[in-house]
Length: 60
Image 1 (cartoon, one colour):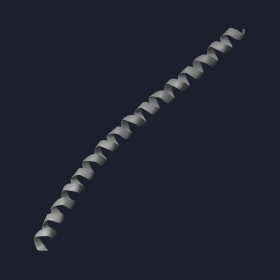
Image 2 (cartoon, rainbow, N blue to C red; image 1 turned 135 degrees about the horizontal axis):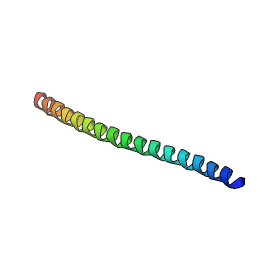
Image 3 (cartoon, one colour; image 1 turned 30 degrees about the vertical axis):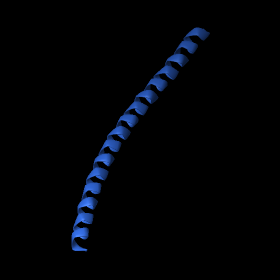
Image 4 (cartoon, rainbow, N blue to C red; image 1 turned 120 degrees about the horizontal axis):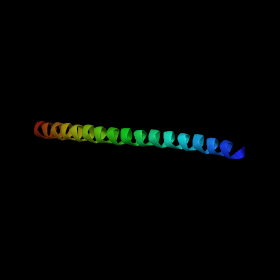
């Protein structure tokens, strides 16, 4: 009688662990995507600042 209960408990625990692992992998993938986008925006902003400084230098 205890074996089916233990088996069911182990199955529930494994399903929960799998679900949490999948959720964590999705979160990591989203984090990497956001990091790529931020890197792109920082690069664009750095170029804009560089152009602004060149214009300021010409004016000065």
